[in-house]
Image (cartoon, rainbow, N blue to C red; front, top):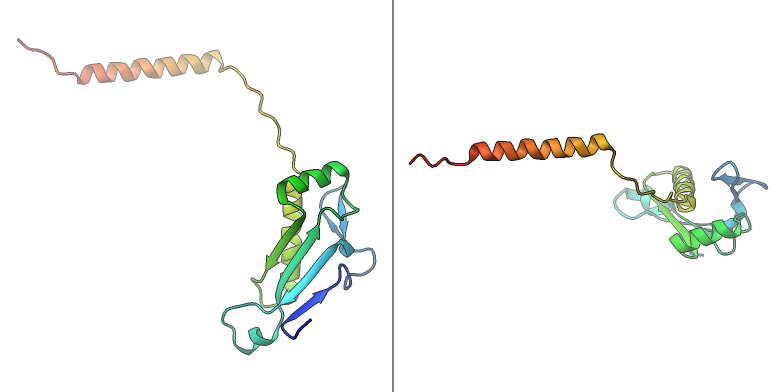
Amino acid sequence: MGAMSDEMEPGSDAPEGSVLRISRTLAIPHRELTWRFTGSGGPGGQHANTANTKVDLRFDVEASEALGPQQRQRLLSRYGREVKVVESGQRSQARNRDAALGRLADLIRDGLRVERRRVATKPGRGAVERRLQAKRQRSDTKKQRRSRNWD
């Protein structure tokens, strides 16, 4: 670990028992998260040159004990072995950490969402009638625009 980067072991700064709440039934312990802090790029003067405010948050899907087998498989198929979030929008490391946790929770929530299969249905009788009526009306409009032969 150099002067430009701080790295924390998974969950080393979190109080014992801290969790990232994903849903009512799923909470990921902070010990399963890996944090890395580096200096944010771009302008900002002395503060930006000395403060490690950029947050790199990683969650190892394969090694997680919090996920069930179906949840693990769903996340692996959508994101791969690791879910990674990088946040550097704020000047404060604490705010970037909070934003990164929120984005990670959103990503995992979206990754676990099961898409409902669409059930094909026939159009109703009213919809068919409206479509045919619109076609007749359009046809009449075009007939009226045709040039007449005045021989």
